[in-house]
Length: 220
Image (tube, rainbow, N blue to C red; front, top):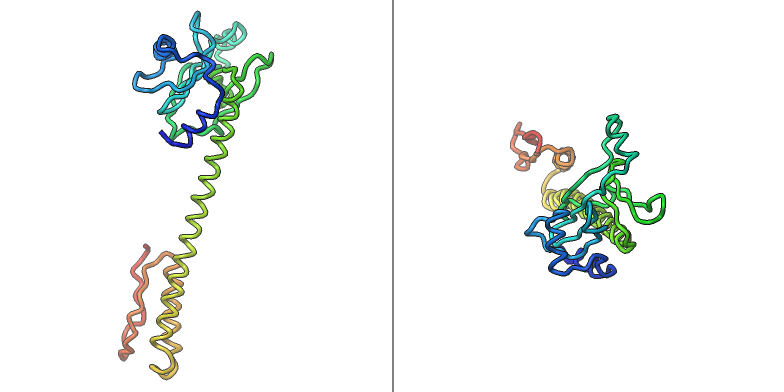
């Protein structure tokens, strides 16, 4: 389990559903949470009737939607839309809060989680809203860092090409050829070929008469 996730769960309010061994057994059975998932936090509406809610575990998020009300059932019968995602398990490595919409219910009694306008679950504890917000912020920061590293790698690669040109100029300067202009042009062309995604090697550095200047070996 990611240390950051463990820390965030630790900063939440105490689990609204008491995590006694008896309740954990019910959560595994009724929500249901896979038996190899360790339950760390849960907000279950009740264990009577039709249990629903959300559970945070060491491996991911498990949720169960509430039973649709009479109005929703009528719409379902007309095939207008399926109003619920009854049950889902999302492992932490695939969980992204931005995939969901989380807001208070119309009567203000709870929070409703939707995905693509379909009800995923409901819960009452406000600290879970903050958990979603922090989780999404962390994912965006990780993404920005990843993009920055890629950009830095590209710049470093371009810098390597430039260093190749500098090293060549030092070795094949005016002291070792009459002008060097033709050789420099070939070297510069090779660098541009590399930046364009081609494998390019300057092979005419020995100044062999009528010898080849550069070989381009195709796309990288």
